[in-house]
Length: 400
Image (cartoon, rainbow, N blue to C red):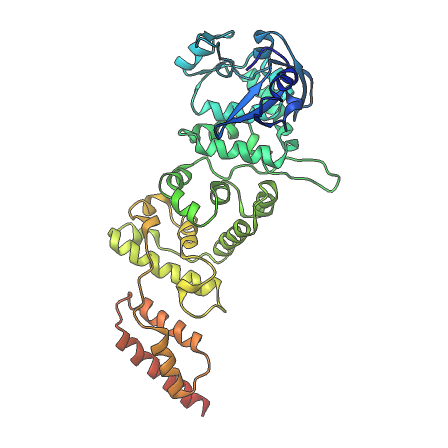
């Protein structure tokens, strides 16, 4: 930070052949690029007018004035050019004590920027010691509806940060405690009035923790994100459209959410008591066969090899987290589970089809794979072909 107006600073360096990004100069901030590294330069600032979503700011000469506009003491720490700590509100001690304190009146800070309610929940995951009496809690709850007017981008960015906090369960629990979970999604009536919605459907975040711990690589490889994976666990089925709009999900993520919706609408009966008696390899086999059943139920018209489907096999893994309790899932290595390889080739099935003049090869592929799955993936190519010959023989006799 600098103690002159950033506009004056810009004038001083304009002739120095330095690459400058002045997009945010209205907020008294610019970026300069030196040796392919970006450095943000910000003047000491004070707020002139706050809107709850943004503010008009101006340059101020004093560090203390700049510090007063910040949200928490832990975010009001400075170093001078010699590396000496400047700590106007005791933020360093609060870091040591894991204490989260607003600077000044909490409600005034929240009125200046409504996102600070969510930031409070995020920092609470790391700094769980708070000055938080019932009176303050009730005041914050009354301000909870303010987050509804925040932009989709700001809500999304803050929720992504919350999900990446090590102790994110604390953050989500505080969100629910302050009833903010009831305003994250937009619930607009015909008069454009924003109302409460149902909020989180659960206070048990173990599945979210499991996904974070083991599933991030698959999430990235499938070009999804934590928001699209986690939100269906936090909110009920009827909120899917609100999730899509609030977090501005792209086509692939929308397709994933629709898949989860289909899976939930076609949920198969699973005898969980029997599964608790199975060993891990037996559970894996059970789950693979269950995935096949879901595939047949959800994609009734989709024939051909399963691994060629438009719905990736990995999506079924995430879908199973809506079917099984986490205690069962934890017994196997779900995210490294692979679909067994069917050794029977399309060419061999094509040769069989040509001999009998059967028209639809994809139907034969489906029948072959279905036979193989229901025989616990143990059928040899020869056994599958014998089954297909029998099937074709019946079809030919029926046609005649």
